[in-house]
Amino acid sequence: MTTHAAAHRTGRLRAVLLVLIAALAAAFLPPTTARAAGTIEEVTGFGSNPGALKMYRYVPAGLPQGRPVVVALHGCTQNARDYGTQSGWTTLADRWGFSVVLPGQTTANNISQCFDWFQPGDIARGQGEAASVRQMTARQITDTAADPGRVYVTGLSAGGGMTAVMMAAYPDVYAGGGVVAGLPYGCAQAAGSPYVCMYVGATQTPHQWGDRVRAAYPGYTGPWPKLTVFQGTADYTVKPVNMDDLVRQWTDVHGADQTADASDTVAGFPHRTYNDPSGAPVAETYSITGMGHGQPVAPGTGATRCGTAAAYVLDVNLCAAWRLGQSWGLG
Figure 1: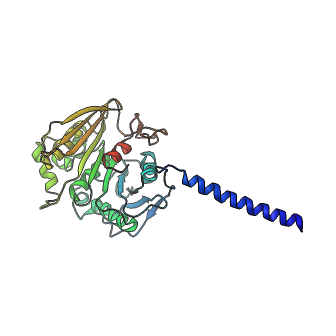
Figure 2 (figure 1 turned 30 degrees about the vertical axis):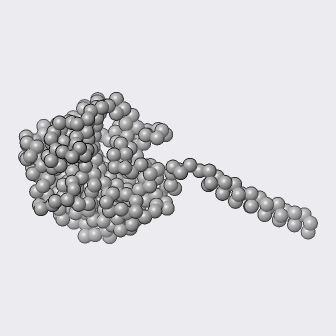
Figure 3 (figure 1 turned 120 degrees about the horizontal axis):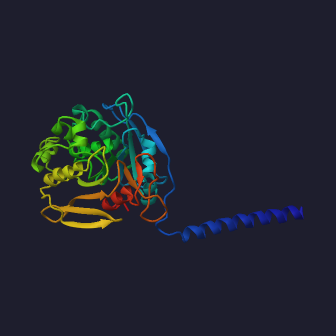
């Protein structure tokens, strides 16, 4: 009996000590400690889904209400889950506290799993794939009680083309867009072919480019999303002229000229910023010297590092997701 009682007291003391240690550890954790990781899950029943897309999302465990949402669109031959992790977006969601919507294309829509940024029925407000992505965004805002004023969209390649679509068709939803190796809105129609757009570009004045955006939501008088573009100088799939045309398009939409107001280097790469007449930045570009077609990442554990190298996810010592998150105030 005496031995049993002693063992019982020892067990109670051990339990108390463990609780005290846990409490002390929690008290001294730095305020920037990452939230618990969540899992990428598929969501069904998010709307009428006229574009027949799939919805996936990533929500960090314990995410509070009122946090931002990032919609991240994968490139051709990629899938939503891999793009979410390889690009670094899920890691940053844990680190900074926001949720991620990951739209998924299907081979039934496009054999190469490209978002159909060039199809008139998929790029108009209220129609096709654009409407499906908008419905996913609305579902995510509702389910996470997110801040509707802090919703952003980004994507690679065809996902970058669809990013420009969402910015043009739903400027009332997205506060900013990050186009990675993508195309201007309406480029396939302006060039007469998606391939001409990709490989050559389209001959349009800045105002003609801007008119294509303005026609996507006639009568809209609210603020337009801020544009950020990442483009490799050695990209032979989507030629760098498309970055220039994106700048022409969105500076015109914002009433700005096409001359950079600030130029510097970031991680050794040229970086330019364009301001509107009031001096507010409305567009910025990162020209990644020597990079081919892909998503820039910077694997590692440093504060500015994120992403994992893979096919079309390229380690160039600059993580596009981190740069976008900083530009959007997510960090």
